[in-house]
Length: 353
Image (cartoon, rainbow, N blue to C red; front, top):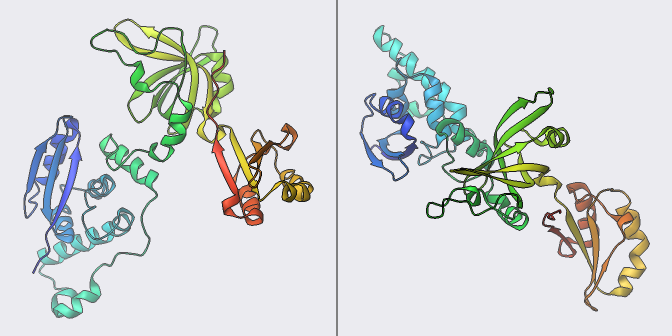
């Protein structure tokens, strides 16, 4: 008895004709369509994994089309991962194409003369390679569909993001009732998100400036980076980089407001505090010099804070003991003190001026 799988594919309105064209290639068990409020269409395709590839392996559809189905998550309901499918689909399609050639030429293959039990030995098996990292899967979805389907790259940074921003991209959009944005002209704000596009321009003095689009969990906003700020921040302005931007609001008549950049701060460069717990003050005093030697192995802007549990006392170490909180020193300190005695606290970005 055949196992029939249902695949779900969500495509943008602009990709509707392409999607229906692919599915019209005699998908054996048909499909259903559902129009979504966003203008997108959800297709529910009924098929077997290999049978679907057999139908798509004709001259009308190339391997790139099948690759895009995999990247978009269309095969997620099948037994296997996207990474596994990406590795084997070329082999399957080549095998199907060769079988068709043999059939047209009236030739028989070894596969045609063995029994059903022996045929299993010739089946393509899924390699044990696991799944792509979440961000890779999301990047594939955006590449193929233009939108994220299974999540958003900022979701794992949401707590850090909300702690540092003073406004979301939604606050820069026009309110239909008031005709104005929530943020006001000239106000200083901090936004955070991913850089999704960048356009370089040159002033009359041949100085470089940029326009970037920053996307957060709610939408997008345009950021204008004039030459002086661009010179300081250009190394952080790569597409897909996660950054905070501090700047001034520029209101636009009948349009969304923009942010005039004053500073760009990558997510990984926000300040942190490293808290180290001792049982009591006496334990700390006995270990103080040894601790200072360990901290001297790192230099940075992150402050170290001592917490003495018995007295519930807090001591902030001087700036000359500041470190850079990174995996290396965290590993050494955790091995020495124990995981329960080490804690990293993200500090919100300060609003200047």
